[in-house]
Amino acid sequence: MEAIQLCEASAGSLESGDALVVISRAEAGSMACLDIQSAVQVQFGARIAEVVLSALREMHLDGVRVEIRDRGALDYVIRARVKSAAERLLRKEEESAT
Image 1 (tube, rainbow, N blue to C red):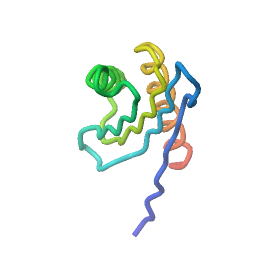
Image 2: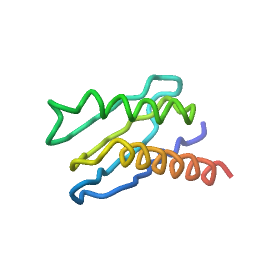
Image 3: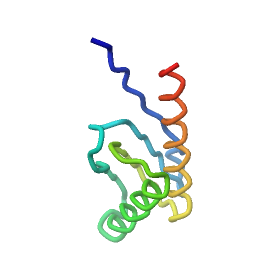
Image 4: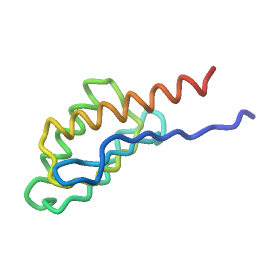
């Protein structure tokens, strides 16, 4: 039996106006699992989730767990952080497969 190596990747920071995004694999074929922590969760939590899921759909990426620590990031920052972390995850998985 082959050992499964779990990968995770991150992008962003905990600076004001930014977000730290960490992506790791969940069950293959499962929907994305989101863990969002934000000081503006009540006002913008649904919008943050919408932006994250949209970015993942654009990349045709499912079966991932996404942790977001938001510090007041705007939509375009969150989208960029998610895409960067996802690209890093895919690159790590590709490198570990060879």
